[in-house]
Length: 163
Image (tube, rainbow, N blue to C red; front, side, top):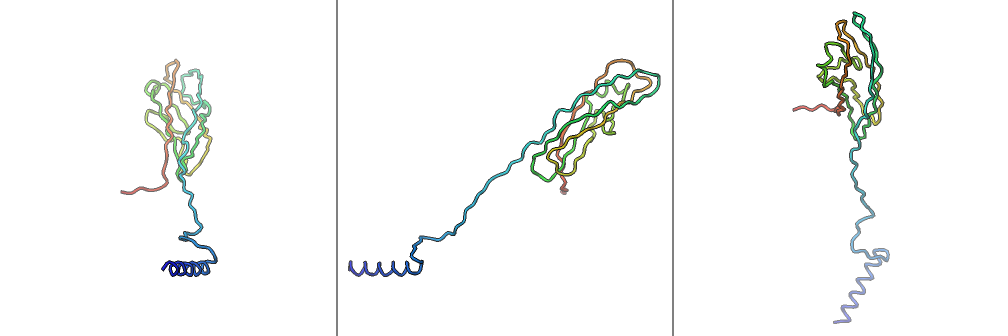
């Protein structure tokens, strides 16, 4: 019985080798591999905008003066197909509103946020420069005034969401 078993096994092994080109595989899974990974969102930020100052002599008339440009750089490495916007408001608007009006990018800056930049398309790095001007009331009181500006960088989606 031992000889018969060995002979049968040898014949079967020979047939397998001849069919497989001399190679014996337990199972052919193919020559494939997978590389998987995750790409995560990067920075979404803006640099601190510069300060501006002005000095205007009262004349008894309304006056408007350009005071320069507010500049900042925006970094958008979120890796999404969407834009962004910047809103601006003055937290202490009520302390100077009777004496002068501040406009940035042609928008009157109050204690309510105004959109001063609207970047609708994807942009990974953007430098902004926004002209600022003050309009002094002819009834302004002489003194030192400060407008505290609050900048807010916000994502803007180009996709419509419906409920």
